[in-house]
Amino acid sequence: MRKNIFINLAKALFLIIPLALTNDFCHDKKSDHKNPGPVIALSKEWKAPDTSQLGHTQQDDLIRYGRALIVHTAEFFGPKGSITHISNGMNCGNCHIDAGTRLWGNNFSMVASTYPLYRNRSGKIENVEMRINDCFERSLNGKKLSDSAKEMKAMIAYIKWIGRDVGKGTKTKGSGIEKLPFLTRAADPVKGQIVYVTICQNCHGKNGEGKLADNQREYLYPPLWGSNSYNVGAGIYQLSKFAGYIKNNMPLGTTFSKPQLTAEQAWDVAAYVNSQPRPLKNLSMDWPDISTKPLDYPFGPYSDSFSSKQHKYGPFYRIEQAHKKTPSKSS
Image 1 (cartoon, rainbow, N blue to C red):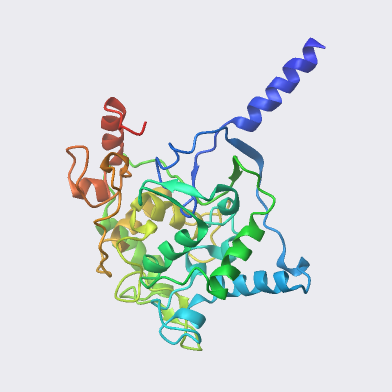
Image 2: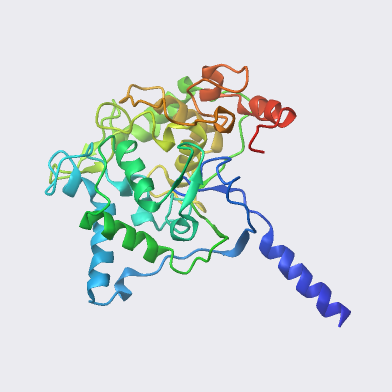
């Protein structure tokens, strides 16, 4: 009997070991301090449900429509969109790979189980509608979609369907974007340019302009800077998120289990891309409590004495060490 007790205890401890991951759609760094509760980490990788198993009900059709909106956002909302023109021509699927189902590809696995969620960036409790519009205004450099629009309801239906098997308080393995270890130096845009020219510009263009699909309505390869790219308020304008995304998804054919770039190359090319010109955004309402800003948030004011340049490029471990010595109000 005593042996069984120890076996069961060991199993329980295995399940609750926290995973080193972050989800760009579900979590900002240090954002869940107002949502306390137990977190169960799954020991198996999450697997998205198969859309081919959907039936032909009205709800199933709405879910399929939601998926189409995620994959081909620009066809509906881009500069040549069939519904309206409120985005830059990029697709949600450019950041949320395989319609938000790829492991470590910024997937939607935890959205349904996590929202509503208090987010430090806004200082508010946000629902899924607010989070989607956040992407429209930042990553798509566009305007908000009405909460009552059929298209909003369709995207939410799809996102909730994707995460239907993920319970409250469960953190899925492979969710969101992997958190890479900080470099012991600053990320280097000069080194990153070498990586970009050698590997990335074949798809994304010499000037980061991307490549349009044959229909000229959406991008086959999205622009990484310039007027049609994400603005400075987008999540991947933070180097840690962008580097983690690049490491496990770029160039084409890369997966978490088969990376083509080293972590160092990912940090450097992220620094190069995010050093290029892109649309601006009024961020004055972001991070009302400045002590909760991520270490790699490149815009002040800050609760520490480190420069904006170091907050953008690093070395981040020094900022992290300083914050550990002087905990923020949220910790």
